[in-house]
Length: 111
Image 1 (cartoon, rainbow, N blue to C red):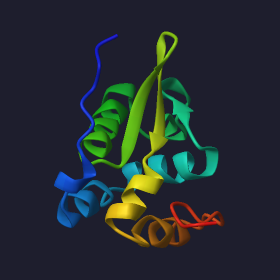
Image 2: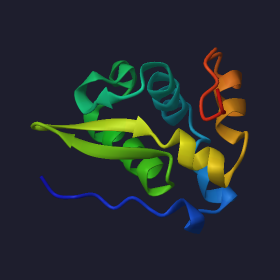
Image 3: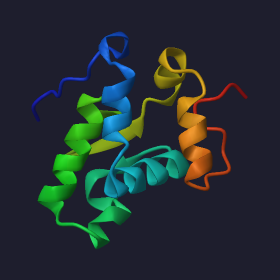
């Protein structure tokens, strides 16, 4: 399985991150990742809304904007939010997004 590029969040600007979050399908992915901690590719709830190829595009946009990290998990890939890293770069942003999505957990915020 080919390694994927994950940007250093120091090189990601706020407009890029917000642009990645400005789509309902991508917000659905972020909501599920925030609740679950991580999802294997074929298990995304968004697959009930879009095709696998469209979901792959949305996951790529989120990964390239630094929102998620993809790691090999057997023959699958596991997707996880980069919550701590995002909170270091943009304090309070991910918890605000999570709160707007109705997620109770304090994603990316210190416990």
